[in-house]
Image (cartoon, rainbow, N blue to C red; front, side):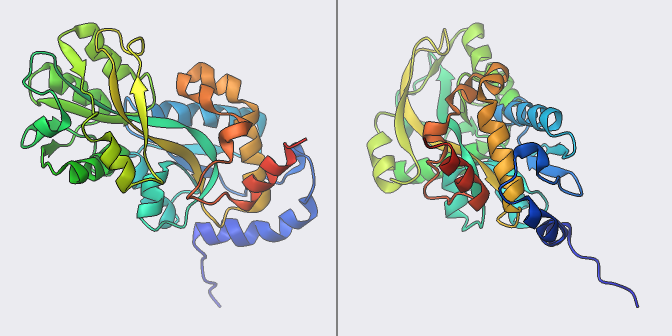
Length: 310
C-alpha cells in the first residue's frame, strides 16, 4: 500500500512530538533538533529584515548546529505571514498590525524592535504634510511588504490616494534621486542604509506626519504608536514626527514547544551580538520581549520568559 505523504509542517509537528516528550525540562543543548531545516522568511534587498534575519541564522546555526535555519527572501512582513499561514515556513519576521489584521494563526517568539514609518521628499518640493501627497507618485515598498500595508492604513485615515509604485527599499532611494517618484515611503528599523543614502546625497528631507499621527493612533490603538525620528539619526534629512509598529519574531503554532523555547533563548541570550549586525537589535531584551499583544506568545516562548524571572 502506498503511504500518504504528510505536508512538511505536519511532519515537523507530529514527527517531533514523541521525540520531544523526554526532553521536557532539559537544558538547551539537549533539545532534539528538527529532522529538517527550519525556514525563516525575512525581506528584500536593502531591508533591515534581511540583515537581522541573517544575524539570527548565524547565531542559531553556530550555537545549535544540529538544527539548521534557512532564510527566504520575500517582500517582507505581509508576504511572510501568508507564507507562514500556508505552512511554507516555520518562522517569520512580522509586524503586529498585519498579523492581527490578516487573522493569522501566527504566534510570537518575542518582540524584537519597533519598525518606523519614514516618508522622504525632495526638500524643495511643495509637500509640507502627508495630505500633500494626495495624487502624487510615490515609492511605497513591494506589494506584500509591511511598508505597503501600513501606508495603506495611514492613507485611509488621512483620506488620501497617492499613486503607489512598487520598489524595494534599495531601489526606492535611487528612484527618488532620479526623479522617478515624488516621495519614498519606507517602514523599517532605524537607521536604514537606503534612507541614510538620501541624507548623504543632499536635497531631501523627512516629512512630518504630525497632522495625522493622533488620528491614526486613535483608529489603530493596538497597532501603531507615535515616535519622533531624531535629527541625529539621518544627517541631512532632519527630524520628523511619525509612527512605529512593533516587529516580532513569529512562529507557526505547530512548532514544538521545546524548539520554540530553544530558539527564543538563542535570540534573546545573544541580543548583544545581534545588535552588532543591526542597531535595531539593540532593542532586543528580556524586559520587553514578551510584550507581543495582540499576538499571543508561543507556549515555548512564554515558558522561556517565565524562567527568566527571579
